[in-house]
Length: 178
Image (cartoon, rainbow, N blue to C red):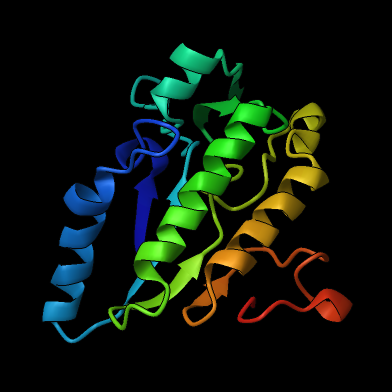
């Protein structure tokens, strides 16, 4: 199981050098031990103050003025910085990333599962702190768009979600979402 920061993979809207330098070495190491990899990508991985590093791709901040919201939580003993999940350029970048990820790894026998990830703390689709204002940072429209992107990109490799979303299960069941 690998947590991988999106900024380690993506350096431009269609540039993904981290597939070769970050993902491949991990997948190859697991395969060499006869194991399958599970991949989850994230942008905001809460850490104690002084050790936090954002994994939102820097080009989005520098070139597209993506707004970031710093936060802190006593309950989590952590700090972080969440992107504006409704930003159109961020959503375009995420869609491009998912399409490239699927193009490269859908059906790759070394990968057991791809986790939807990307949104929220640890890529778990939530931004829960003791401040209830953080609970609504990720719009449903963004979640639904990302589910559609994964559904379009992965036809063979199974896709997992940390917290199932109504748009991906039940009457809306997508292939491989669970």
